[in-house]
Length: 152
Image (cartoon, rainbow, N blue to C red; front, side, top):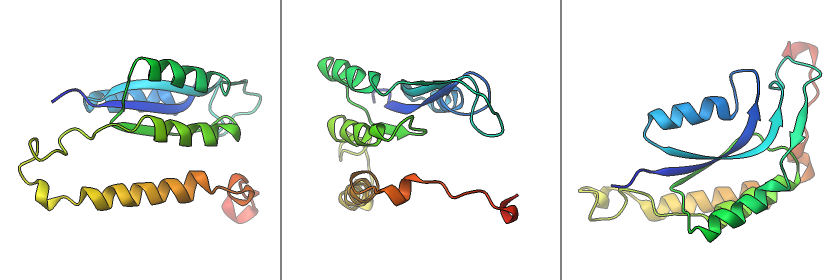
């Protein structure tokens, strides 16, 4: 079976245990080839730090996707974390639509108990999530609540 490949769409923070610096080694240890697609570069993560730098990578996302498409790349998993701008929401949705690949081990030849798996329902649920989360996102879902005293 070929090595599973994942597009890892996330920010890269120079300091802090988060973002691509955490995701890539974890997935790699699991045997997944990680293909990072940075959404932004931050000097530190945003939790508890002030004055961090932020480099928006929005313009690079479609260029990278176009190049990967020209190479015929497909991904068995697409992971999305921190997005650097509102425009990136639609770009991630397009990426998911354009780069869906076959799931390794899901064919009848590869899996002895494939009749026990409901892959059609899994695909249906994944598509509903995509439709209801990325395609129909509205302003209400893009705003974080203000921190109150009872949250501290």
